[in-house]
Length: 117
Image (cartoon, rainbow, N blue to C red):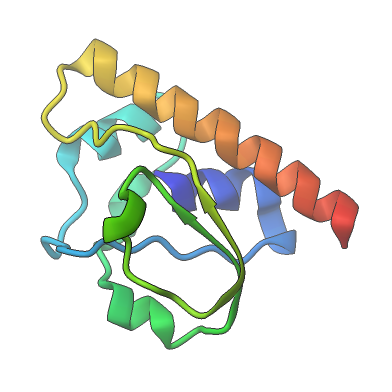
């Protein structure tokens, strides 16, 4: 969802990649549905591994979502940890709250990056 929000808010100004430490190879259907409610087709995305995203390094910013010291290292100029809970097993209402939290954080970051560049 974070990659989708970056594409929505950053448009052509931001190139975003989302990856997981243990990707399943497919996007969570709950995430597809949650983003569809906002008019974004997440079904065109695919689940990627960290190794796949490392191909684009060095990155300007790497954002982690609550993995703390367990986060794998990625070559980047800046690291941010948002400590966002994994919504994977949450019911729809709670899942959408996390979706909206991610959306707000991404929007703030994109606006900050646009100002800094």
